[in-house]
Image (tube, rainbow, N blue to C red; front, side, top):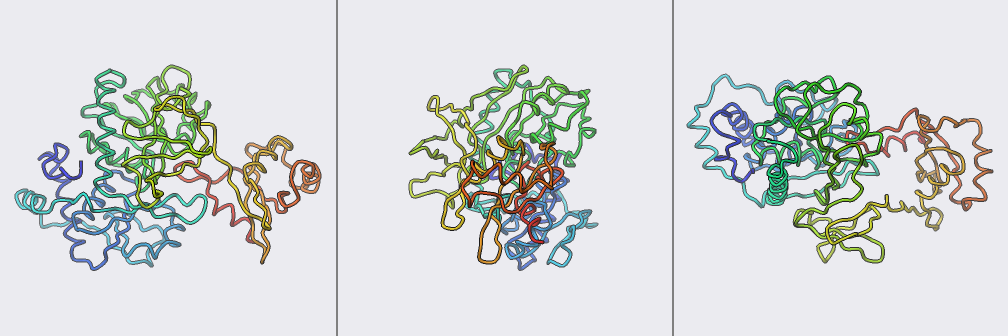
Length: 448
């Protein structure tokens, strides 16, 4: 783990080049006045880790924000400097203050590097700042300390060590972690960076973008999402020891796609940026496991229908006075440590002093018209009305000239303020790397 970095097996002498790279980043940043450093490296878990550790050893605050350029530009007040690796492009952010780490021809001795790490330890109270995906509005800043990240990694390491002892996943020593997810988000940061370091696993040189890149012949583990799983078509020549999925609900079709290419167990993670890992479930055989098992050091409480999560790994910035974090999902506790997810809690919006369920509007569009759509609150001057974006990929009967007919069919099912006033459609819903719908992009459709 990070606090043990200088003496960790993961940073043994065979990783001298890695330590040298971290040292180089830290040395450069120590000369900078900027304190809040936006980390690059989204296309390489290894490069990302070097930039992240270099920032921490420079006693700066790492800012982790998804790789969406428009989001970074919109949130430019959140950071002072953009940090990039030598071969990285700033992808439209050239106008912002940025530093590109370049190779140093004056190689530093191993003794000097070791002396640096021995004299500069990382404090558990040091923090990094993550941002929610912003899929449903402005990204929210979440503070995580190194102690919190280390503690969660220790808990997960214990969990995976038990799984290995029970021969559920096979021997993972020396395995490489291949990841399709962005390490700037909590899921990727935890499972593609922090836990591999804690377990002494290899980090991949590049982020996996398509199935043809899954060609590793040595033992490997896959960190991915349902969005990637559903694109798989060709059986893997060398299956991973296991795969894990998060970022969205795993549908039966996603798991079926995985089973067509690999017999390996699929571990599904339920969590959030605010809470970290909440629960896991393991899918073996050909069927999806229905129930979830709560993390060993966490507690779930349901009060008046609202589930609350208590964990030492959740961010204090989002906890209530009792240290709890409310969850956006509906769930039913089966035992103190197991539960069943019942779906998302209703998204409620206020329109004309009236509370409306956007979830109910979407469900009505599906049952009455056969349309898969996303309902939004659209501002028109001082007024707010309902607009919907239809997903044509999953709505084959949609007719963009039949909006008045649709409204007539919905009159008896929805109250007047809930009737969609504006209609738009997309060939397929825009989603981020975690599989979440990009709400801001849908809202832009109504700007004309």
